Image (cartoon, rainbow, N blue to C red; front, top):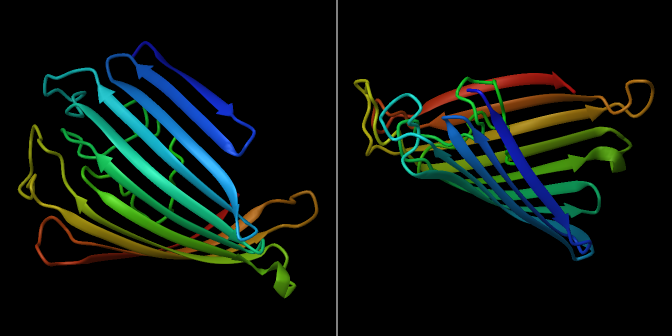
Length: 239
C-alpha cells in the first residue's frame, strides 16, 4: 500500500447545528465515507443533543481475493440522543444499523487491513464488549451516568448501560468456510455494564480519571441453536 489519504470538512452554523463530512482512500483496498449532522437544543431547561451519523466503505476489487471484503458499499448508520438533567445526570439513547455483505461479514471504519495499523473515526462507543457491527445487525443502547457532587463526593460518578442487538449475520460468502458457517443464521447479542468513576480534582494530576468497569455479555452462538454464551469481565483503567 503506497498511499493513504483523507480529506474532511466541518461547518458550525453557530446555532447549535454542526455538519461534518470526510472521504478517505487507501491504495488497492478501500474508499471510506463519513457524514454527520448534530444539533443541540434546550428541553425543559436542560440540554438535549441529537445526531445522525453515516459511515461507508467500498473495497476496490471484485475477485474473491483477501482484499475483496465487501459486496458493494458497506455502511453503518447511527442515530443518537443525549439529555443532561440538573447538571448531574447524563442520559444516552443510541441506535445503529449495519450493512456489510461480503467476505468480511462486519463493518470497519479503518482503511488498512492489519489490526490496529490504523483506526479511522467512529463516534459510536458503548464499551459493552462487542462492537455490534456485524452484517445486518441492529442495536439499541441506553446509558446513564450520575455525578455524585451533590452528595459531597466531588469527582465521583456512577453509571450503568445496556445494549440489545439482533439480526447479526456472518459473511455472505467465505473462501474457506468452516463447519459452523451458515450465511442464513442470525444471532442476538445483549450486554449490560456498571461503572464507578473518580476524577482527581486538584494537584499536578488534576483531571486524571480512574474507572472501574463491569460487563456481562450474552450471545446466541452460531454452533448451537437455542444456546446462550455468557462472558463476564471486570476492568480498571486510568486515563
